[in-house]
Length: 159
Image 1 (cartoon, rainbow, N blue to C red):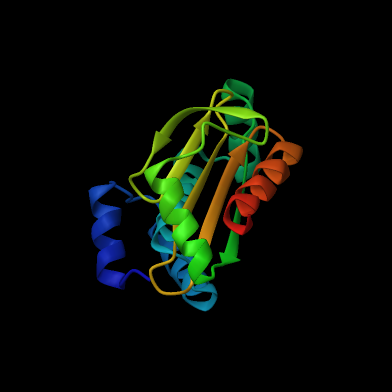
Image 2: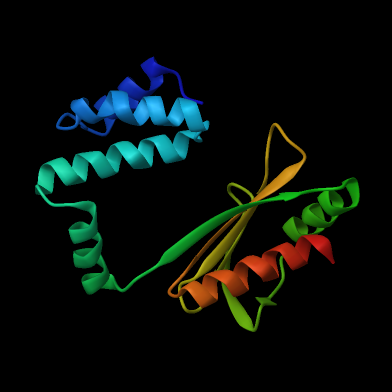
């Protein structure tokens, strides 16, 4: 969890000056629910956009989806045994070329193993630094694709 001073510094660096009123509510929720720093910053950015555009989140999302199409996301946590942690390290060394019938267009190893598919969907599998779990993040254009990719990512770890 980010400290208050770190968040205020990030807000200044990102020039998030129009949503200070939302800060306390966002931070209170983040502390209660133990949100990760990326989620906190995302919530702060969302509050800034809502304030700057004077529009609801739903209206902003509809406008964005009209412009670029919809993308849905999911995060799941998968408990890892020692064998599954080893398998994850093997995938990092030699990522799969396809998954769930989709060809991998590129791989990013910056923060785990991110497989980016030709249609723009992706999965990111990264080990938690504090628990024996993998966090699996999925983004795709439909709920069915998100579910299929999430299941395939879990299958990689549980083979």
